[in-house]
Image (cartoon, rainbow, N blue to C red; front, side):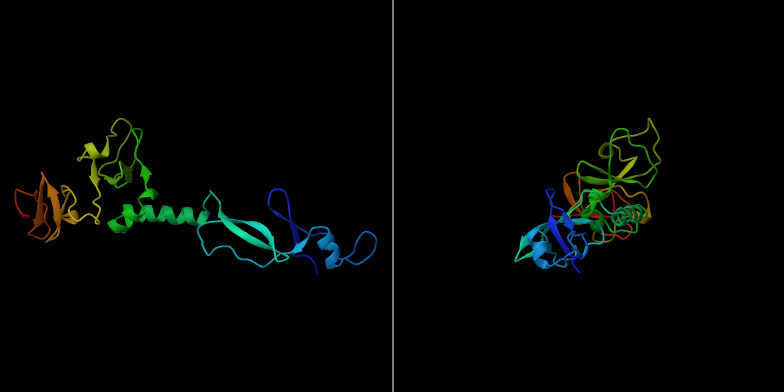
Length: 208
């Protein structure tokens, strides 16, 4: 009958009444007994609707009831969130996530460091940009992404109107008709489809 009555302990957590319906002297437990001992009814509550995190409530006594003061997300993400983040990175490295979405979630990719080793296609963060490894990399072959265009491909940010030109590796990442880039201090617009040429050589019109 009084299972929902509780009091706040020193750590801020709830301690529920567990004494049953009868007091040690044989008298029936009443609401007044519980109130005198500091127990109050707990208001029904639900955590935030977020399937990716766990939350812990803090409590306060208001209007004679124990109510949630605020919900605090725990530092450790739930298993569900970790799985979703892992799948996002895996899909991005397979080319199944558009670049705008990758930029918005750039913090999910690993940070490059001098000890990095990994497979071709791995995406890393470096100096605020995303890079994709062109080759498998073992100990002794690691190079800094922004200084090694033969081993890393910069992932252009589509939110930039005039991103720096990146040499395509083939027709699959060639520039489309109308693409805008900067190269050698000038702006260029692609005037051909499936454009793998360097601006200033062929396939690009200087933008004035």
